[in-house]
Length: 304
Image (tube, rainbow, N blue to C red; front, top):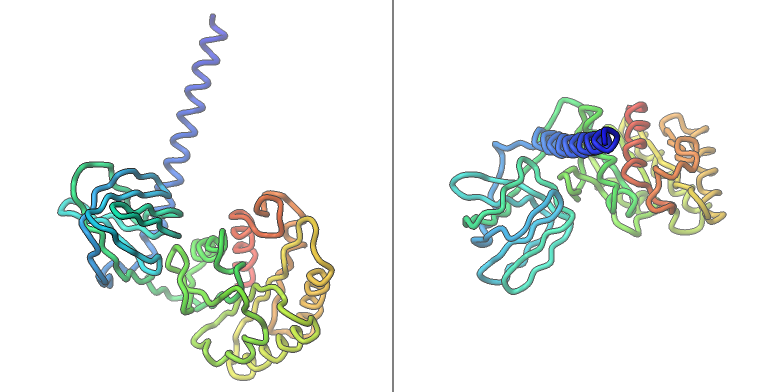
């Protein structure tokens, strides 16, 4: 009897501690996010519609509308009434005639309760607060902006006073530069479009002949160093977990050799850092997990 009671008590305590831990992490995440924004500089772009909250969680929101509305995830949104304003950003939405589902969502300040009250769905421009620190431009292909890549910038921001620049914005409104087919040849040709930075972080796969890629990289970095004194260039090797093509392994080797003769370039070798540890990879493939990007941010902060 006593043993059953003890098991029951320990089970309840375990569940309570787990709940409180998750709740604390979620609140701390929102607190971190809210500190990054310049709330006084918010600009309203459009009041889309009056809505009612149908269902909600930390990363999901479904709202009811009177008519079909189309929204895009480029800006920040808030649901607002006379009592509260709750800001969020999201990855993608699913609209129908009388509802919109937001997925991959984060709440920036607070999460509302489900009520039958009317809210306005408002699209806004909410800029990041500028800090006294270096300006960083993260440049790359999908490895710099898709899936868990946002945690690289988020964790860098948590560790250091830095500003991110670039034309694109991630889920946390941190700027970056990138698209899937970006190459060193493209960077060499368009280097003049990237300005006002102190640090460049490059994370991209080779897109063509390896010899030409390295030559383009050399020309690109030489041009930067000649035009911008004191610029720090950080290049990240490709992740290797299980099967990886010979060309990727050679590419990583070439990057390491390149840094030996270029004092302005620092290479962060993922193979040395991760050593095939499963937690750092998504579903055991050659893509970084949230933990992988956070560990990468730790290594980058050491260089900074």
